[in-house]
Image 1 (cartoon, rainbow, N blue to C red):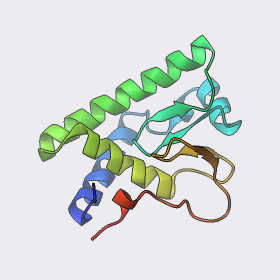
Image 2 (image 1 turned 120 degrees about the vertical axis):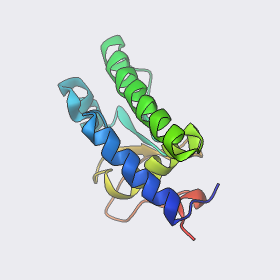
Image 3 (image 1 turned 30 degrees about the vertical axis):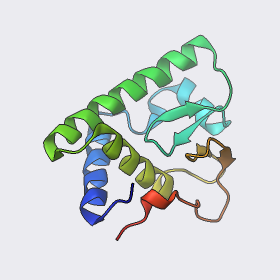
Image 4 (image 1 turned 135 degrees about the vertical axis):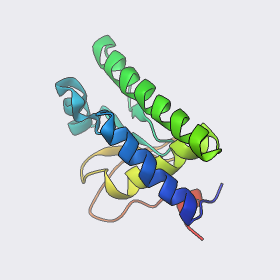
Length: 131
């Protein structure tokens, strides 16, 4: 899946929609914020938060709630743009990996490997490139 500039614009719209909903910045709770800071939770290339290791119940519940809200926003935008939810989510995932994963934070690429962001830019999946 390779995204063109229109699709990238869709991602920016989705990100704005998510931000307006107050959940795209996963720091909406102290528990999730702490888990992001210590690497137990990270952003995934698919546009959702994920776990590096099995989480405790409260953390799982809060991350699940954030991901449910993200999916609702992606679904709404996908219907408006007549594209798949997966395309919207992946496009937002590309944008997130590019601009919102801070140095020292965990992230996961489609290969399933968790990494920690260093000073260098994240090596994005091929489908994140624009035409």
